Image 1 (tube, rainbow, N blue to C red):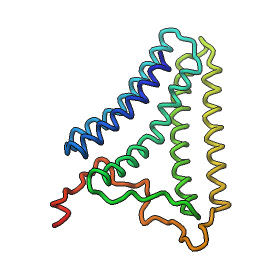
Image 2 (image 1 turned 90 degrees about the vertical axis):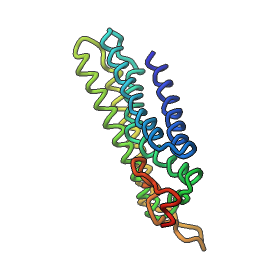
Image 3 (image 1 turned 60 degrees about the vertical axis):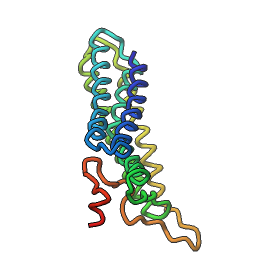
Length: 207
């Protein structure tokens, strides 16, 4: 059941995201769009409650419970960045906004960009580890929690590997080809206009 629910939550995430952006830019109903986007965290709450109930009902702690915690952590660490990135593209394509700034490809600008993504992975791992530790505490000595403990170690190993890869961008920054300026964006591509900020309409922009 837990694995099925994870799949449902993933599909639901993209359905709500598409519906929210569609309402915001195609239907010109920003209030409805925001309401749909704000429903996305409810999916993680549903998964968390279902996982806790599964353990409470006597299910043996298994990899699926660790996967649920990791999924929730990943959504917390990287979900907001994904939504903002897609919102920037939708604003440009359907809302008359400026073109999204591409991620830097060279030099320390690329290293800083990758570092911010890595920080999202650290947040994701912290949330996942906290949920797994809570599950281990909840189970106590009444069950085998070795798989949950292994999931915590696995998550932080992945974060460590990700960090080492990011570090290479700082130690050996990639140089732009000759004749091409290093792509340093005027603004951070990840800092596209926030979903909670109302964009001015065309009439307001001309004022």
